[in-house]
Length: 138
Image (cartoon, rainbow, N blue to C red; front, top):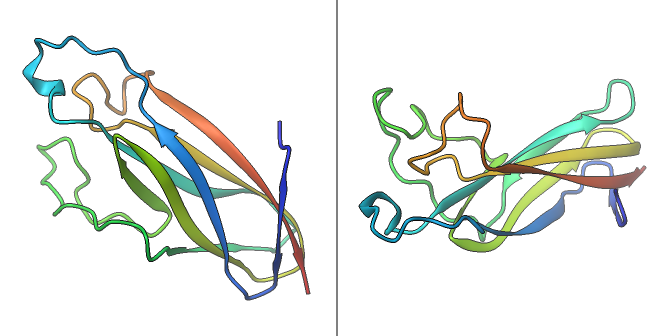
């Protein structure tokens, strides 16, 4: 359920932020989970006016991503774009978003713990969705 609507003007970025925390219960004897949990949220435009487009830009509080790992690793093969925001263990993830035309938009954020040893693209575990409504005026 969307309970709060952000407002923005065409061409002027607005900051979208969400608080994230991994609540997984892990085996304390498993050495693979003793280094903390890398979380991420990936933002996309879910709905908007016909022809309207949301453009994402890195927020100044976003930490840099580690160097990309090769395809054999569990990380991305290239640096993620600004629409993907990392968080270590817990914290606030922020992204700047600008809109090219007025109207009502809904942004979708998919948060996950993609680098956990028990998570992969074929694993149906451990993500949640966030929806943010943005009313954009001229």
